[in-house]
Image 1 (tube, each protein chain N blue to C red):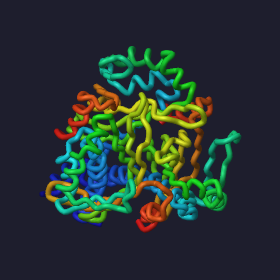
Image 2: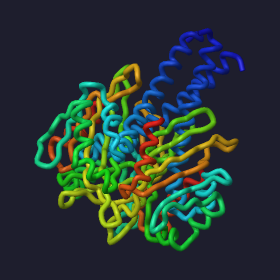
Image 3: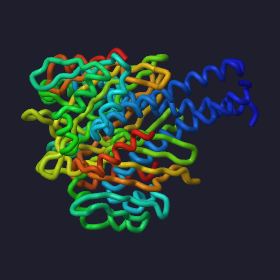
Image 4: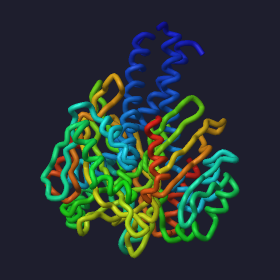
Length: 164
Length: 164
Length: 164
């Protein structure tokens, strides 16, 4: 390769590494935002019209659309009760695959809640995030989340790792 | 340095950063594979003849060889009981040091298990992974794992960080 | 841009990615050091005169100065009791922002302690680390840590993410 080709190849590789690290930062900023009740900023981690599809309670799966439905959830009594109690929405480092202006992340998240002077795992889930590059940086297009109950659906999310 | 030297230096540095991120992806793909019962794919994270040496129960340390012995373990009733119950094999982000075609990672892993509508830490361990570059990407050559019981052996694994 | 400009831009971008990964390694080396009683090496993750400000117990916030006060804490009966019992000081991957020779990291840490054949979350906290580049690599200048009790102070630390 000549100098021009080597520079172009390097620029593309550096951008992919930067993208990987930027997505890691994006997903790890979610916890401190929702755990401090910063509802609007948390919802802005998604693109407008993006979604968060999660299971829990008696629900088989609910998709909330960003930003309004997410803001409402993070402002609701259920979520704000966690915030006042002391909580961490922990994003375990996911497998991140960048493909141009799109990316996928797959990994676990945990909600760690205070109780009687210690903390416990209130919720554990597997997640697939679909991410897109925007003029303002990487954002979440869709987050699909299922709790770890041994269900077929949770195992199917995990097995998307096999296609990456 | 002239242009040629600067390009060569950059290419080496970019490769090292890519290697770091590729190893992070490799180690974080383990959980979703074993937790969904994808035994063969999990075992293929190791090179053929590679090993997983772990403590637990009454054992002082067992080394299982990849891929057959690992596949058998992940297909066994003990492991599949966890899968059906709901479980996360969580890899905490380790310290990763890349040295050409070899690398070392050192860090914690946790098995988070469902019980009575919440989750608890069933197993916590310190790990040293020896990794190698192969034509198919980075793979695990050896994983050495000891549970956090305050044992000398577990502390010795942790202290390998001092030599890195 | 001409070749010289493109090389200079690439060199700066590669250094920023390397810095991000080096800080990730630095913060993740803390656990294996303190959990194996390697007091001096743990304290050397800070610059001389750097500080660790944390809450806990009845304290409203204590700042210990590196290295001597930190070495004393890690050698003390309280900490060594954890080491002998079996413990993991877990650093969840933080949001890392590099700005030349300084950087900030913001994220959760957990102390996972053994009890009756399983492990539990003994301490959960939000942290802001201020980091500096030194001739020997990145080091911690200040670590500010508050447990997750739902306090205003803990939420204020989390909200520093909004300014990054």
